[in-house]
Image (tube, rainbow, N blue to C red; front, side):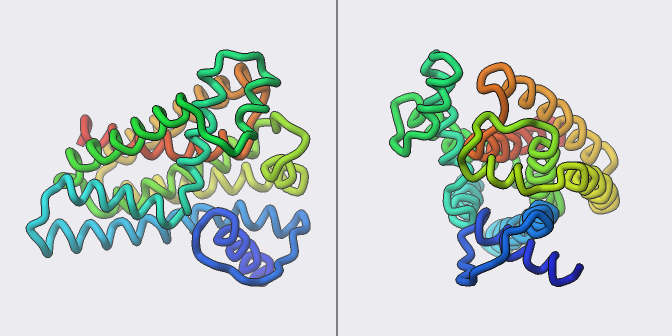
Amino acid sequence: MSRQLRTGLLLALQFFSVIPVKKQLPMEKIHITAMYAMLPLVGILFGSVLAVSVWLLRDATDVSSLLIGFVVVAIGLVVTGGLHMDGLADTGDAYFSYQDREKRLAIMADPRIGAFGTMVLLLAIVGKVIVVAESVDSVSLAVILWIPVFSRIGMLALFSSTKSAKLDGLAAFFQQRTNHKVVWLLAVAWLVFSFAVTVWSTTSWIALILLMLLLVSLWLYRAWCLKNFGGVTGDLFGAYVEGVEILLWISLLFFV
């Protein structure tokens, strides 16, 4: 089991981060399931990098909060290779085309970015920089660490509970090779663990806000994906992760 989890972690780093894993890894059902089980751990890794960066800039230097916000967003783009922002841009192009479902999926598969995708991308990046800059001075490092974890737990729940919108593509390939019941149970376990740690490291009020926003946004986004795309795709997963992280940062701005 430990070997399978190690393989799952390497696969998660290979497909969901910029960390180079130059190794041919097995991709059987048990390994793909382990990959998704390890995604929140990858979130902890990313969150730790963010928290340490904020600590160094906020507490050890006199730089402005705007620069810290820029650094936080830039680090998020670098460690993921821009994967989630790319999904957000493709989702924007597809949705705002106002075409039928099949045409939207075709637009999403196009590697080129259009006007709507560009606007969504710019709004997301600039908006996230501003929100982080406005809230980072009052937010605990523990919350900064756990935001990437919560977003990936939500992705696990979305992945395991929603059908694929396409029969081809990387996301569809992964869904066909995953034990969805195990991934769902792991998502619940990770959520309980993360909620408990957040309560312990911050306050029950902050933990409850993050939990409720995660669950409500997951339910709404899942319904939106089914209505507009007939399911989920890799781009929709990426858009979800980025959107949830922006939402959680906004909640810290208003409720902390």
